[in-house]
Image: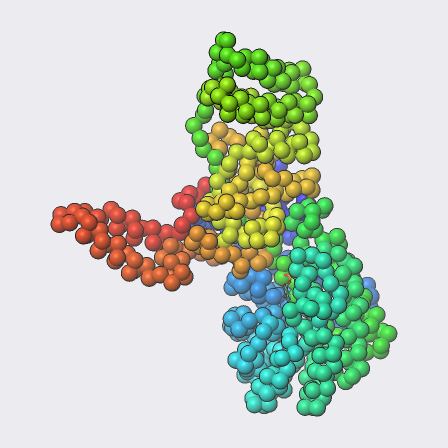
Length: 621
Ligand code: PLP
């Protein structure tokens, strides 16, 4: 409940369910059924499930909150959201964003920050069938061809393209291109605000931030445009404070500062009619108390943005601008989750009880160690005391073994006793002692995924993504897992798990069924994880499916697009190898090595087979 925003829940049978409406009222669908339907259609694990209806619902929620704020403050302007393509490049997501526009007559535009992103926006605007209803906001570093493409898209296709000046150096180039092509542009300008946000992405704000014009540069821009009789082209003021803004006070301060700039620029003759407040709307990843949690709601955010713009318009007597947001994380995160298998398999290890031989110098040591366990489990002695005793006994056992006083068998028994006590403490203890006990007893689960490919921020910036099993959630967990990925990298592990206590834990509670395997899901992956994930150890894109639901029942699962995982041949090509040549090289060496009559055919057929498969382990459920 702390992070699912109504889109994910647990049903009475203990199964994870997905709902495409965040109000929690719509029909729910078991993830295991969705996975089965995908596997029947040929999907493999790890499987990225995308629910475009969740992205659609987020856009609607954002619009609804702004509508409410507009009504509340009797704001005479309107609102539009622009989706930043960098948050999720996938065609399905962009199409969903644009389809919300045409289905529901809501206006949703696209924000781009590079030439390839502009190409995507253009193509998708054309594919939408109504390019004239699509607005594209061009941010980021620009060269001549970027600017020309934006201007020509406006002139030739009738798209509304706003060229946003992100750095002062772009002004001259933009004006030259406009003159050469004889096009009157729609210009925007990104302001460098002094308001800073303290989170991880805070460096996008403040005076020394990478993008934006400071006040002196803004003034100079106005003068230059005026001299060229182009001041009327300056339509939009934009700022972006950085992602994941956790404090609403930061939004309030930024809005006050941006509104003053807007008002002053209008006073100088700019015909501004759009206020683009950028992205940054935060998502809760790790529970209410977590460090990645916004301390405000979407409605608070919309109210503060609209109220600030409204106050400015009333005070200065200027027309109300169109308010644009560029939320990426907020719109895209919840729509994707990764389903993967994770397990711990080992043959049962025999008990070392009976290892202590009569007359052993360690007899007394083991008698007292056993007593700690017996008192804990039978007479309910103090858990903390037993925990501390066990730590001490383990330390002493290690010393005795190193000094040659303890045999290998006795050391195995000491390990066993320690494990038994810690397991008991882990299921009943509290606080840090509990976490330490869990950690000492956690089973190493190996997960069929690459953190670097599928949840890069978990490695890169220590972000916690919620993880949980997809079924048996009505049983009390009986074990704890450390979850490692497939990469040969010790950083390839999920290091923090979100708990229902709101705190983070180093281990994941699991139901160990004797077989030691579980189907787990990693959530909130829809923003930035696919676009920024890398090919470490050459694990490529996972299999993915777009899932919609036809009706209320369990049978209504529609898989609108199933994409296989990237094959090794495709990944090797990315790494600039020629798989065909590699294969031929192996074939010729094998022929030489086997000599006349030798048969390297199995080797070669295996090479061929592996080139056409992904690097993930072959498993489904
Ligand atoms: N707009 C701009 C200019 C950005 O650089 C970004 C990303 O940082 C965004 C919008 C989207 O931010 P978020 O996904 O945090 O809403």
